[in-house]
Length: 392
Image (cartoon, rainbow, N blue to C red):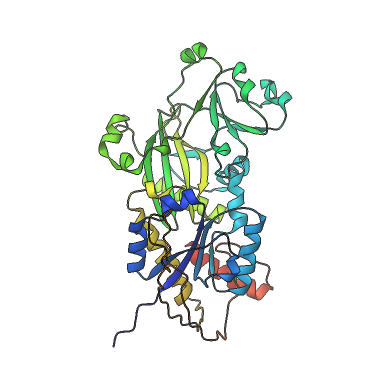
């Protein structure tokens, strides 16, 4: 008799809007076929009272949630937390977000990369005196909130053409050099080892001649607000005149993606890249976002399901040559939903899974996926081997 498929439970804790876009029926069904059950975490109840889950997938913030993750980790030392709150928080600040780019060491014979000139403004006196902005930073500039926590406020950005355009800004704020880039932005999605680069329409170039006739500032909304259907349609690209835009070299983008993954210690993120038209082979990373809108990425269901399957099987069967011995043998049973329909997700919710657990005589201390803990030297060596296996 064939051995029944090993099933894994992935508990997800997402804000309603993120849940609605990410947890599609197509993703739930494909993951289920591969033995991965996506289970909604009730954020109105303590996390420690739910599950247990093989993996906790989350995009929530705040000290309370961080404390809940810590408590859950103590009770469930073999669970994977994707990703560490400390690593995610680094992307909540637009200055520390891009500092990781300077940590990368990537060799390329023909391409170079970096970040635009930028400065964080804390006081109005500095804001209204461009002499204090630093060398090379001049109009036009992009004004961005310092905090990048995914809130509506953090997305309120504007292109400032001259001194008058500064009047609407309130520190703390980041002023970033506006670099002409042919009106095209490259969005690079990273899911573990998977890297996908797509092109999107961006802000148009601003010439010196045009700058003289522009006044104040111009607010701009994200192009990503377009629906997935519009984005995947070939007509979309033709309409936006993107078909002639040359993609960056794939190997170059992959090297940057993997370098950022190591530097940020994250597994689910995307970053925005532009090509400096002044230097055709120079690329600038202008933004990094945790757990982006993956539903806009082609075949996202397959990519995410493969990711879940990969990390959960590494957890179950071992990390490279280091075997993780786990004697838990869960028997997972999907229970009816007691007649409650949750229309927010657009899918029939799954109630918590019943599990029969046997005593686990050997356990490895819980690891936030990618985060180092404080261990004795010998144990720390083992943990580093585990981390390296995940990162390769």
